Image 1 (tube, rainbow, N blue to C red):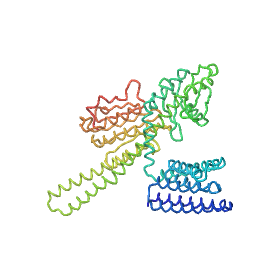
Image 2: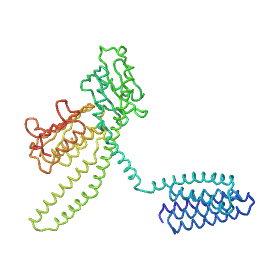
Image 3: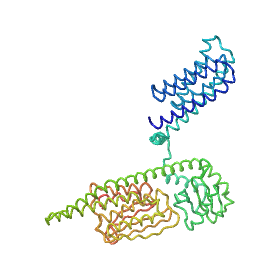
Image 4: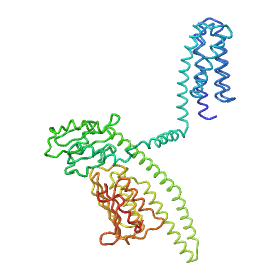
Length: 531
């Protein structure tokens, strides 16, 4: 008997006992023989039903119907004499809800009510209005008690079913797939943000315009108006933070900020400045901001949906990467390491110099494979979002690669306190990681230089080595394609070119992509990539 079955049995047994105890006082108070005999009969039915449930002599539906029939007949026979026994109708309804859900409740209550009206009519003649009223009055509370038990049944079933979260996720994913066809604006935060900034710039003459979105407990710039004057952005940043914390528009001289509200809370903030020659009062800045907030209400819903989807995608990807890292570390890495121990044991027993040399080569190759697996585990487990900044995450990978490969990697950081969006940091980190790994693995350099510049929402990361330069692409190489796809996801440009002076290789990723460059600027490099 499973734990869930034992739990159901205990709950149903407790309900039957409490139901009988609750009937004792009104039955004795009635001072009539028929209700007392009926109580004894109901007690016998409850005992038999509990024994049948414990031994599972039949399916839940049959046992529910049988108990309901027995109680309904007993109560129907006693009804013309006394209504004191009608409370017993709630017990089968409750146990039916616990065992079979709402369908069992409907079966039990329907059976009891039908018999409660049919049995006395057949045995004693036509029922009085008072008797019919009493039967219906007790049927309704029995239905309510049974539905409460059905709710408990559903809760216990979901709690005890380890697949319940997956089934719930299945329903949500199916709904999302069905709904995706109606998302006419798409789920790209950058594209949706561009529409918002265009709407604001069309309505207001601005020299600086930014769109901020939440990133943890802080705000991070999603987009900057390309035509805007970004001199002195700190005042705009501070104003955006104030508008976010107050959840209302803020105006300070020529600078302004207002939140984009959806479902009663802000999902983003638009901040900017008017030209010095424009009088904020004369152009009606306050009134225009109010109108813009209303006008952008639908855009706020689109943007919030896109941000939620991005957060979900990143969370699912991170979980999968950690799972793969665990499996590689506990599975493949351990198996390969154990082969190394066997090779060491063979090396101690051989006396043939030629065989010893071959074993030494084999041991060296096994060590190289173990090192490669460890680097892969590090690659999978390291996340930019878990570090203090994008630069610190890149620095951590550089230190590990230097330690493992012996190739010095020098990292230069130029970062401001404001961080990029998590999904942008994640893709830039993976591109940088791939570029450093490729340089160490394939270019045979004497050193690698990494320069990381992050002035949110702009960033530029350059990885330069002094190795053997660009090589012909292998047929099984997908490094460049993956790097380009990552760049496209965040509207970044990716360039892979010979290093300064024509030696080595330089990988440069920049976001957002300049207007005169496309995110696929490395598309012409397919034949000359060392990845």
